[in-house]
Amino acid sequence: MVDNTTGKITDNAVVPVHSTVTSRTIMHLRGKYIKRQLTQLESHGMINSTVRKIILDAMNDFTRELEKELGIV
Image 1 (cartoon, helix red, strand yellow):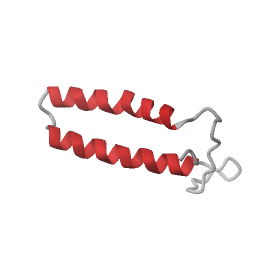
Image 2: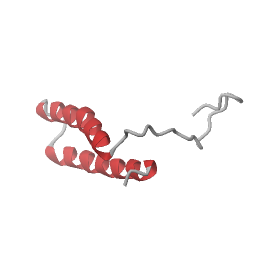
Image 3: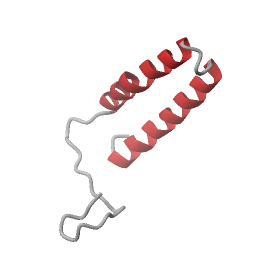
Image 4: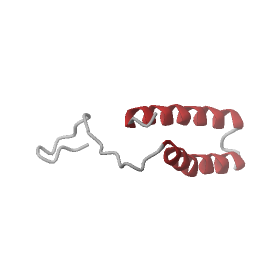
């Protein structure tokens, strides 16, 4: 994030959370953008089911961490 007063990049960003962000919203968005692309890659032979599973497992871990950071769980 860029500090508007100094123009410097900071890693201590405070992100406002909209009250309607839910675990369901996060899961829907994750599925919408990740699963579709993985299916296309797999159907074109660019990845196999093992790689797909590894990526989905990592995204599930990311989703859980995001929910924790947002205070949803």
